[in-house]
Length: 232
Length: 147
Image (cartoon, rainbow over all chains, first blue to last red; front, top):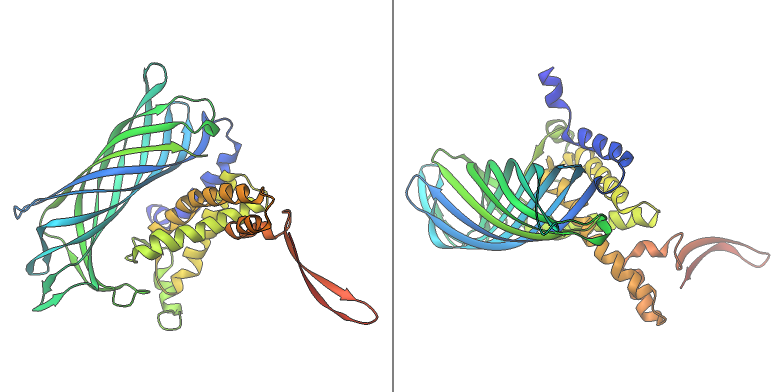
């Protein structure tokens, strides 16, 4: 049974939910898409003692369904930043300094609960929690690996996973067409589990040169302020 | 596809879901743009916004899980960003297109059609159609573009 469940593609279940959802009624029990912007501060911690503070911004999207006080949604946060301080990247047996433009993409299935507390009966409070998977990519300014110096046409991608939780407020409006806005503060703690060295010399094709299982503890604390609106 | 595609890849990648390592140009621009065109196509066929997102997701999933696996595994970012970010871009293109289509100036209306190419087809003021011509003097196929 477990094997069968593992083999059912994520897609099939989602398509079923999407098609079933058309029987839902008003915004109180309906699907939604939200979009907005985010301002993100990342603190990278490793057991090698080097820390890195990164501040960036980007876009934030949500897609899900609301049932009375609960929402179940997929949330995605994309942001760009730049690693200015020297951070050590562990490539196999080598520790090497690497810095450069950082791009981060995270995807989190979340459960959100409207607590019933509000400010002026207008801004309704909610809490959310869920797992998060992320990929952070650093386009290398300069890195040494196996006696060669890599730059410009190479990048490092960290795959990480963790937990995302937060608190927010949404404008209380009866219809989605009135575009209720939201503001939320989100915190994620993620641990990197894989590192890929990628050759991007050919723009149309990213070639993974090496994959490294991360043995040291690299933990990211991601603080994000997100503002947006329900679009439809 | 010729260089990196094979049925061995197809078998190996079937049902797999990974984070892809593609350049931001593909993940942040090409895929949302493709998603926006999917969204606009279904909107042009009379689907609501949410139905268009659902159909865009189905189209994307079918492509990722049945065609792209010939070369590489299905991508998590593509599955989400194509329909969702694509729909956000699609809404902007649709609204802007409608604004220009309501202008009297034909140049601005043409821009409106370019922003949303589905307005060239059935159900919109401009129609691109192929009409058979069967007359004594001539027989053929006529292309009609009506603004």
